[in-house]
Image 1 (tube, helix red, strand yellow):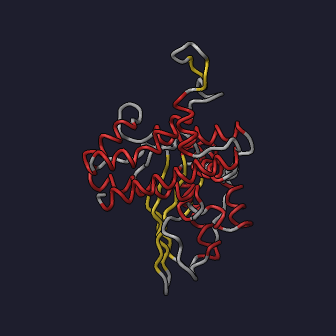
Image 2 (cartoon, rainbow, N blue to C red):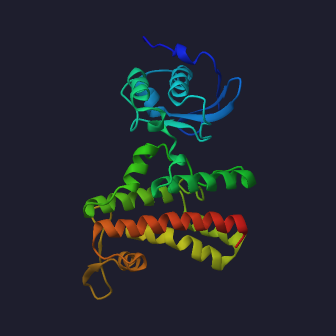
Image 3 (cartoon, one colour):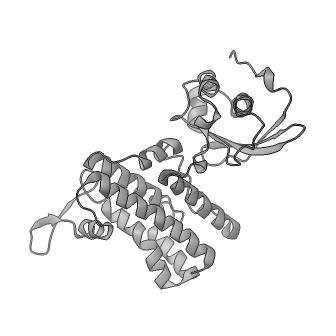
Length: 283
């Protein structure tokens, strides 16, 4: 592999420490110091992108950090969340990705947690829920999402508008898949397990309120082409599932994919934020 390091940034001292592996992701803690500054940030590489590059994690991190520091400079601090590389935002090779950093700057690879749009807010609050539960129980709130999707791609999909019903259902399934990874049941995530866990901490009434949006998203998934949209009612007549109609009423859906997805994703993020706040304050 013919890679070069940036000689221009010889002045700063750069230390790269390999952190414990998280799911299918390799994390590094980076420290950059010079005569005036002392900065730290995180670097994350998914297993998928490392497999595509056919490069060891430590080697990739060394070249990426070199180029990121050169691109960003040391005049201002790095965001602590740092940088994220996966198969959606990176090139087909490490060399190509290094060229992207040179041509487009380090901001192209900002960690999703840095951004402020709804897609980023979703993953930010999931990270916060993970951290809060780890402190108390040593368990993540959400089992690794790396097996489902690349984070930057999911963020883009979550943030973009639904052009038609198929795009709407895809995004509902994205939200439901995240809910399925809630770490309150084995071997699959269990909303009933989450509700029971919340009841033990906040009481039954708060548990009902905080878990209801997630149950409704799971009901909303019960429609064509993912699940059976129709059922035979008590008098033998084929009709749309009552659970689906209940969820559509709950979210105030109107049959317009763009506005319907906006309503669902906004409620989903707000529900996660409300859950985090409820656990933080105990109410």
